[in-house]
Amino acid sequence: MNEIVKKVLDAAISHLSLSGVMADVSFASNEEIKELNKKHMGKDDITDVLSFPLIEWRDATEFEIKSITDPETGLANLGDIVICMARAEEQAEELGHSIEREIAFLSLHGFLHLLGYNHQEMEVFYNAILEKAGYPR
Image (cartoon, rainbow, N blue to C red; front, side):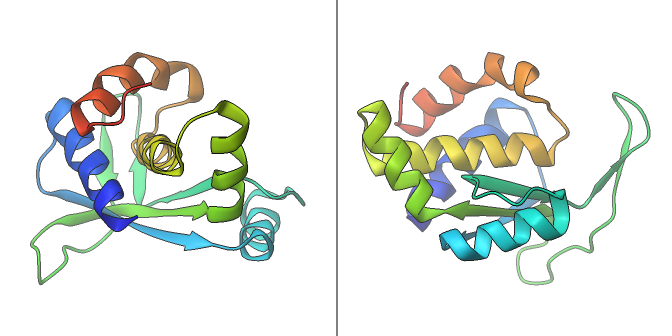
């Protein structure tokens, strides 16, 4: 799964003309993501993906990265993305595509949230980035 995440995040970084950035992605169980969702979002539900940005937005175009640069990579960490594997598997089956495709989508969705995009704004990016990464819609 890590290879899928890397391909999608690399495609997103390229497509959005970003450089010097990264995100941490981890996978959680239903129970773990429900606990995170309740603690951080105030929602007592299982969800598919959560994002925890390390960016402080001053306005729509200006932001400050609150993280330190990773000494091994030299990249600024934009934040954390947590994906619920069980939920991803359910959604892949419901939507009739592979788990790989669902992980690609959830990784991209979480990454765009780290950058401050809302759901409506993300729509314009999905097709091009997923296709670039090899996971077309």
